[in-house]
Image (tube, rainbow, N blue to C red; front, top):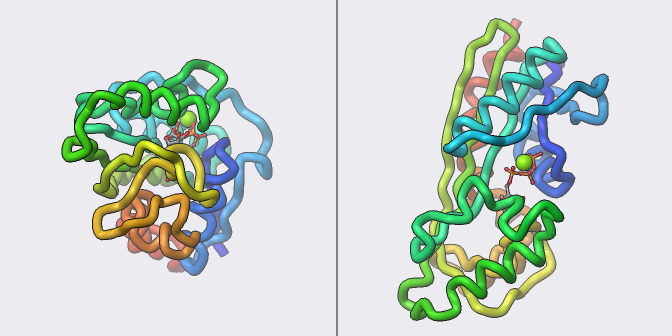
Length: 199
Ligand SMILES: O=P(O)(O)OP(=O)(O)OP(=O)(O)OC[C@H]1O[C@@H](n2cnc3c(O)ncnc32)[C@H](O)[C@@H]1O
Ligand SMILES: [Mg+2]
């Protein structure tokens, strides 16, 4: 089976990517299973720029096809922030709890009807021949002021997807994967991954 390097240092994100890619006809390999290489900081202005940079580095360093995602929460009342800064919104400690508390503080005066937000995921596949495929998945919803639920990671406890009453941290893994920004982006990559495993 063709090996595919999934370039993420976030264990919970990686687990989601592994689940969604199961059945794609590739053997998923994590960064822990390849020799270490220096990883560039995520300095891009867009999710797409960061995703392709992560995947490009990983493919170049290992010679394997590589997929990476850059993702985050875009809050309408905050002009799309935290956006590409989602992982480190409350600073370098990168604490999920501190990040979501800061967002809640920032929207404290925003009326409920304007608490709309979306999760965004840009996912990039870079092949050994340097072909780059970049896709995007979005998951619209709204914020709640009290975190709820223990599944998922990041901002999941304060995000209620459109059409749901539960937060995304209250969805099962399978429910989240089926409709999430990451699930949608990776579905768009699947046809490209299938061509990898063809002789
Ligand atoms: O870059 P890698 O190593 O993949 O891991 P990371 O956690 O740094 O990932 P990003 O740079 O893409 O930052 C995305 C942040 O956005 C948030 N996020 C992304 N997807 C999410 C999801 O499905 N549910 C909740 N929060 C999410 C979460 O805070 C992540 O740390
Ligand atoms: Mg990151």
